[in-house]
Length: 260
Image (cartoon, rainbow, N blue to C red; front, side, top):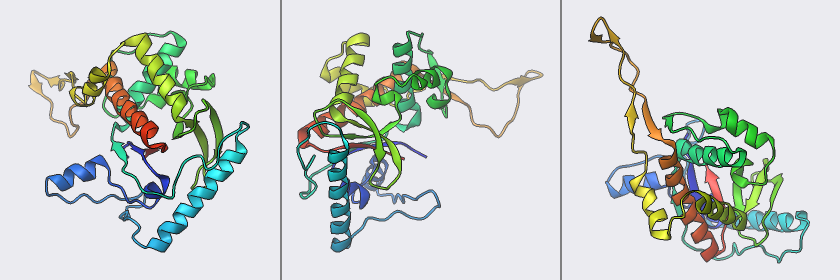
């Protein structure tokens, strides 16, 4: 499964009235891109206005529940779901997002960052990431947060998502602080440089495993060559996307959500 970042109204998100960056690029090239769920069924946008209104009402009630559940004074509603607005989306994929998580884990534990990672690699199986996450560090990247809300408090809490599943939720303000601190400690990059990482470092392989030789000849195999990427390059790519999501969320006062 791919990993997308979405920032916008949750009503639009849950009614699937948005398109991933892959869908958008496919359509620009005159190609059809069909999104499917885990069972292989096509995911279609909700078009019935009554059903969309029901989704909006459910999201609004959920936001009220969240406001009451958080042990701090908050204005209600936490954000406005009654009006439409544009949305931001991009696809870091698990490797790039995982590279950013790995970078944060190594920095938190004062460990060296692996120079390379392979395609298909999972950050959440890496011992250093598992150790950092086990320490329950107050960092949304190390807490498996999948949803950041547009409220001023810097917090992480475990509660129910609008779908009814339990998970960790944080705030846009905390994610912004985390990204700023990463940049301050590692790169001190200005905004133009951060934005450039999105395209300049989007899955550019730097190493490919050479095929094994058998008696001086290339050994034929059905496996495709395994590409390697610089960990920091992919981390910066994911950083750029999250940075842009935070900027959009702050400007429009909307949540950020990981879609996979």
